[in-house]
Amino acid sequence: MYSFEPQKVLPKKRYAEEEDWEYLEEGILTMSRTALVCMTCTHFNYSCDKYCHSFLTCSEHQRLIPQGSHLTCRCSSWKNDFEVQHASCSNVA
Image 1 (cartoon, rainbow, N blue to C red):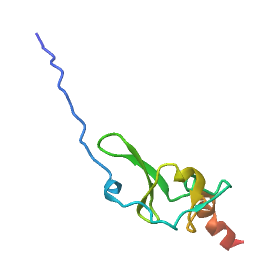
Image 2 (image 1 turned 120 degrees about the vertical axis):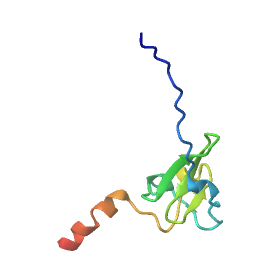
Image 3 (image 1 turned 90 degrees about the horizontal axis):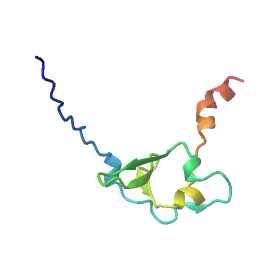
Image 4 (image 1 turned 60 degrees about the vertical axis):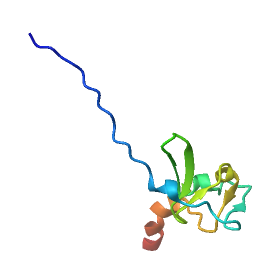
């Protein structure tokens, strides 16, 4: 008779390198009353630390974004994903 014993398989714990990044300095982010905010930027990303706390990151500056600022602020490097994808199309025309 075949006996099946389930084995516990634990996932490999990998934490993002962004967890060690510093926060953006004062003066980089400016208030925005339009949709041009960090959350709509191509460089915006988010991840979780080992305690399952989320943190917001900017890959352009390689810094953390303070909580809440992603909804109301942007920097001078703001890029729209549409502009990045279709930048070569405008050069052809």
